[in-house]
Amino acid sequence: MDGVTALGGLPLLLETMRAAGVSESVTEEVRVRRRRSGYSEAELVEAFVLMLAAGGECLEDMTQLGSDVALHELLGKASWPSPDAARQFLLAFHDAEALAAAKAELPPDARAVIAPENAALRGLGRVMSGLASRLANHQQLRVATLERDETIIESRKVDALPHYKNGRGYQPSVVYWAEAGMVVADEFRDGNVPAGMGSLPVI
Image (cartoon, rainbow, N blue to C red):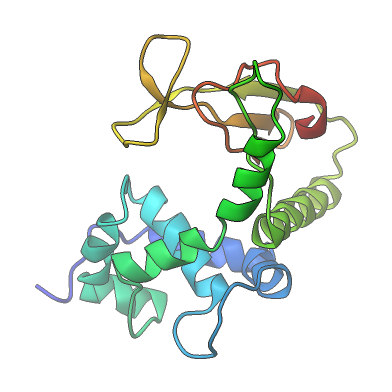
């Protein structure tokens, strides 16, 4: 039944993103496309946010949303990014050369390295900063209680490294603003990166 969707709440999330200036900010701050054709950076970020909100856990879940004709009508979208298009977008935020250079600079007895951010990731950081600033002004927030935490994400990927709980995966660092109820900073980390390593730049 093309006229029915179980994801009728997603358009409200998209409207909220746009009203909060997120999509516009992505357009201004994040530039990874090499051609004018295809989905814009803002459209891809919107697709990822909606997929995650719908319970998606992997790129292949883009296909399920892509086949929901009724949802597309509610969103006002004629098409949806494929898993391959989503993957190519994510790869633009990875800088293999910068990571290799960072590993080469490690002391002989060190194994953990925090991947440096490229221009695309720094752009996303500015999107988050702008959103936090607009939210603070809108809610007239004058206090910021920040909670920093590292959460282990288990993974079976070949390049996932061992973590301190005897498994393999990743251990991203996240900073949560309690009064605003939002994440204001994050940093991707391999599983073997100690929680106390490089704390100050994140905070």
